[in-house]
Amino acid sequence: MELKAKYEQRIEQAEAELRQVKNKILRISTLRVLLFAAGIIGTIYFYQAGTAGGDKGTGCLFRFPGNIPDHRPALQRGDKRPRRN
Image 1 (cartoon, rainbow, N blue to C red):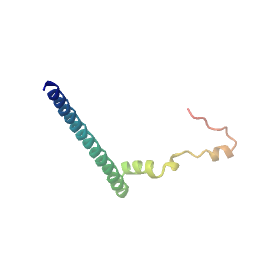
Image 2: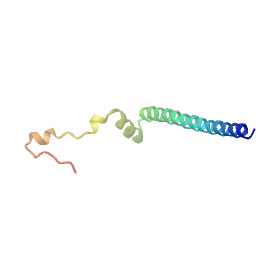
Image 3: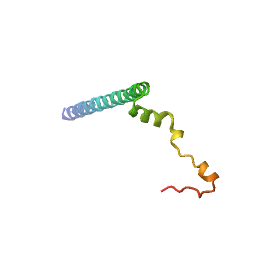
Image 4: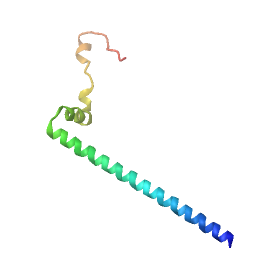
């Protein structure tokens, strides 16, 4: 009988650990979905509001190629190619 009780206890412990892990996964997944939704809603809000913070945020998301400096005029004047530090 001791062997049967030992295995039943082990099964109960494994099931308890499994429940805990499932709850953690559910909490983390829910948090990720909420943070993603908040990011999308915040981006839309700031984009529509036209605030400075929103311009920076949406500029990074939607207008990234505009952030790259254009060195063509300097090269056409004959200047040396600008170096990056």
